[in-house]
Length: 62
Image 1: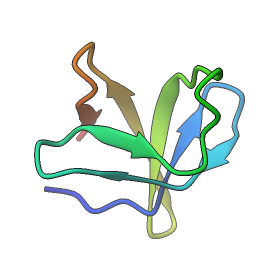
Image 2: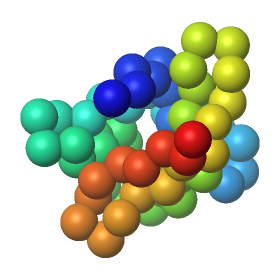
Image 3: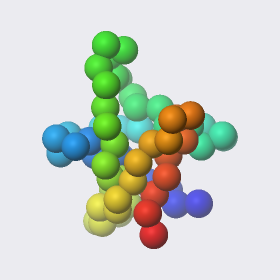
């Protein structure tokens, strides 16, 4: 399991986020009318490729 600090969308916007016990991604302070396509996560000083599956689970490359 990788602990991440935030997620990044395809526009480069950084979002505070977390995963629940099932690995489902939750983005903090997200307006329900917005859609975010996650393309990466920030882990320390690194940006790793990441994506969200149809069921909402976060997958991190590597």
